[in-house]
Image 1: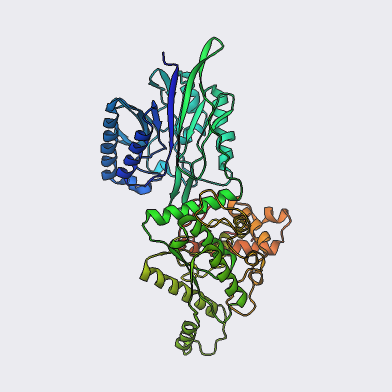
Image 2: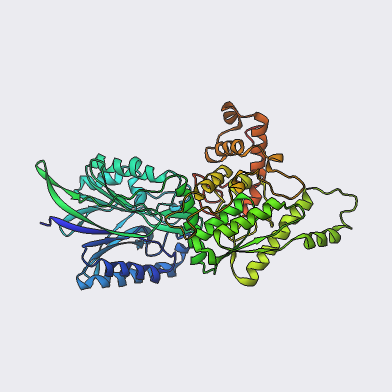
Length: 556
């Protein structure tokens, strides 16, 4: 009977749809970990996750089967076995599953039972649930193989325990969300381990994929709830765990030798790292040479510039100041100071010639009309056109910089400051922007490529926010203070509270009613906004899908 087994956990990034690259990365890990018994890879690692409607292409299913067979044949050399996540067709139904590859063949397959269909997940659109699985016998050890959502409900683990599972190995594609690491460990994994008396391996992937980002942070917990291994967050990692069969009462139990317990990023570092890694992978996987962004001297563009530098390096970030007649000297100085601290290229392109040109062109149509929001939006759209022209001419992707507070209430100009290919702040409220800016000015993230010291002048953080589209303009002229606005939005968006509920918490009714109205009428803008990384419980697009046209209001 086997008394020792070595299990290697490969916390990897992925390339959705690039099966050959994903398979090659798995084989590279196998070459690196030749002295192990089993190498485990994240959920659906062969095809990438989430595949969305790519999964509906028969050609992808066929290629996945062919690549899986090649991976299986690679194990004929007598080296480590592999547990690989992929898609499988059984009796005409498509399944999300794992395959144990050993001895040159596919030795066993198991399919996901619990299919999540909320928030970022819509697996019931693509997959059929598998039957309650049996454990897999591997080199004398009964392995229970729940897949991601299977451990968030008790049934699968209890079933596996009743059939004699000795170690749970749970592969995951679990996207980052604020406070989710605590929920995974304390709220889910430890419960399953304690309930069943079986240790649990939790392997997650790392890296950005469109509007979600995976934080890694894989771990191993014991049957008493002890944290035996904690892998790092926000970076790839390969860890080999050593397991021994130990006497326990009249029987035995498998125990993992205590390994490294890495400290996970705390708030708001975790939010900042999510934005950095998501932008890095979006730019690199889409093969952009770098990014360009407008640097206004305000906090949103300053933190976006810092995120871009930490993601890509200063040499791949191009900042452009686009001053108008309303741009203050303080903003010019702050933009220059920020660019100098980050070490990025900064060009200045005044927009007044274009503003005057539009004014002359539109004068016949605007006869008898006083200047208003229209002229303010023209300035923003001139900036958007200018930045897109630089992007088109030279190739870098345009980063847009609007935060979630502004996007929630429509305080953004469509085809203007909303122009861009990606928005790191799309799911970050303005109060979050202040928090991460303060943090980044004092700390450098572990995964960052930027400078150790401050990344923006402190005046950028402390001065009143302004779009500078008219004389002496302040955001507070049009919006409630951001701490008030964000608290109201958190209630309306993340928690789906009514106006009455929010007013009962001490907020002014007229203000809440106005914010609710602005939130709903700005839906059409958000539908046309660029993608951006999910940070909280309900981001716009994947989580919160409201109709653009509707008449329901809780405040009426």
